[in-house]
Amino acid sequence: MKSIFNTPKVIIPIVAVVAVVAAVVLFRIVGKAPLVNLPPVAELTSSGTIVTNSSDNTVDLAFPKGGRVASVSVKTGDHVTAGQTLAMLDASDAQGAITQAKGALELAEAQYASQDVQFANAKKQQDVLVQNALRTMRSSGLVATPSIQDDSHIPSITGTYNCEAEGSYQIDPYPSGTNSGFSFTYKGLENGNGIVTYSTPQPIGTCGLYIQFAPGFAGATMWTIDIPNIKSATYVTNKNNYDLAVSTRDQVLSQFAANLGKNSAANTAKAAVDSARGVYQTALGAYKNNVIIAPTSGTVSFIDADLKTGQSVIQNKTVISLTTK
Image (cartoon, rainbow, N blue to C red):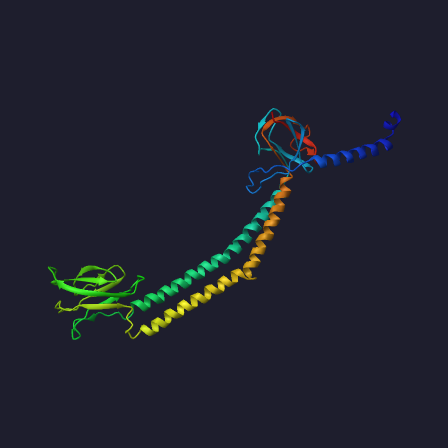
């Protein structure tokens, strides 16, 4: 036996075999790390820490890769909590990969989201066109139709009707103590009253229409205002424009909806998101291997002598132990 240990050519292979056997055994007993948070990377939810239990109340921790120590955040005797960062290797390359992959993911997500934004913008634009055509149809050519057909003092109707209901207003003047000597009530689409004037249009309700009476008005006539005025010379043209706006909106939105559901730019954008997310997760996984996270609360009972800033550590070697009781 003594001669064997004094012979380097013999002892080196023996040590190598023992090391291989030990590594296989260690590989079989090493488990996955628990899910923990790794600040400042919010998406990092687990560490690559190698965890083994050397006894019932001791947890040994190791890096799953070798590298140069960047920082050690604890010392022997410190109490740590689960999820606390204990030590890190130099991970500048891994951090750069995370930043790049995260940027690519955010860009892909923005491009995919823009499909919905385009649909929303198109719908908003088409709805405005439809509403404008509808208001034009309802507001154009409005007249006050008198109850006495030979009345020559017909008031003028102006403004833009902006309410949803269609129907009519009935204007009924009556004597009052105003400057003109008359006021009026209105009913139908809205109910209320106003003052007869000859120089300033007066509102009819709250839907945007105004009435201005003609001088010489005697107050004996009632008028009806139909909305829309289907007898107007412009009604047919305005109605056709409104129908066309509705049809165009339906076609545009249907095409957008179809594009969002087919093998189109939307699906391409979605595939780009999935690909970028995979690259990002891979980058996170590579970064995790550079960090030791406390899997449980406890007291630091051991720190390897080589675990110092600037020193190199080897893969799977226990560098920190925690006593949990």
